[in-house]
Length: 569
Image (cartoon, rainbow, N blue to C red):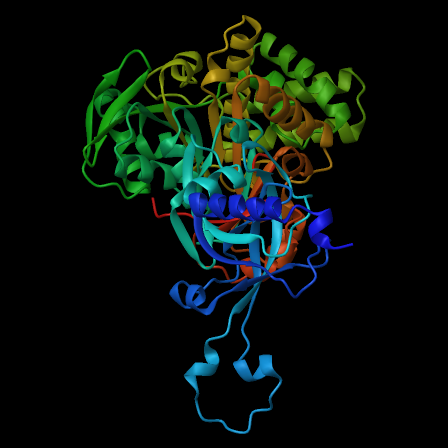
């Protein structure tokens, strides 16, 4: 029985014609699925595409290029990536041994062969993008897709913060932007990379392009970015320590005589420490309890702050991951009783506080190791210089900011942790970070519980570089679990808090941060670093990657991973 009697050849011709029409409408036709090689969609084998020499020479396809196959029988567009390009001389095709090494251009005019891996598919008629499962027919037309098809088939976001461009076949495709939308940010992002690889550039772009962001700034990168781009409604929170005040006011008499200069000296410390030119004080901001300053033509509000011991002592077990479980239980009670019995200032009455805590602990018959632990943590807190910092000409300590006013009205907030690092102990920046994160959560939780969904519609993006310094691997898992998992990353997600964290040492980063960051972005890193976040398969590309070249791995796209390239801020 002939094939013509069993199969409608005319119908097959119509299907092939429809596939060619789809290819031409959605891109540039370059070839067909091979007629002489087996076509398999198994995991181990790629598909062979025959590309005529004229198409090859006009725009040579490269490894990593995207192509689409229009499969006629299943009426599917198969989105694919080129994994190999093969060329063979005319003598090789004919099986004739070469007897000369002279050049012969005519023998180069052979078809090229592309080996591709299918990634996803959809019907000719549109609809949902699905993982590739459909069979592919020999002679199926193959085309280079238009930008719109690439965006659709990759599931790229059409709105959100632009972090760069698709990196395809060794170069950025600047007509295909890569964006992080609210869905991606709400499920948190972790960025890794060595110094100079592009991670801080990426975080600065997110900070500048987001409508509401809080950056914990150690190196001054976000302040410089805000000044360069003249970001509006920007607040700079500057934690003060005893050391800063002592440098500012070497004698209380001097400060009493020149009280007005106090508000001018703090901006000057900022200018010196951050190497800022042309800083001018405009005046006080009574609403925000800050100082309006102008730097390089940009206005922002500088808010000095310090921590009051009487307000935060109950949170110390959460802020300092050095207290044992037993010490954590008794610390708030002991300190509370000491404050009630006459200890007024942590810094000025410190010796009195130590003696009181020792006596209270002994009266409770606590284990010597527990008592020593409490005493040691009190001394560590004193060494930070962050508690009960006083203006020499006033009795009251420098207060914390009016957090609710700041969080309600300001689009960009920078916490200058670098100055704390200069004047405090190693734990200083972490203590400030934990305290402000706690206040951010309180604010978002208050809105959430009263039915205010403004943060869900316009989330606050929390940007933390050098995240391993704040959330290290620790034996105090209960501490990290409450602060990170429950309050900030898990509960914060439904309350409109999005975390974008970066580190060059994920080996030292808390496991919960890695687990709860559902999008991971890797820049130049070694294999061991990539292995920590389950991205070691990209080590060949990333170990020597140029600045700005990265891989994004996320649940939110239609493919598991994408290469992209950032731009300078």
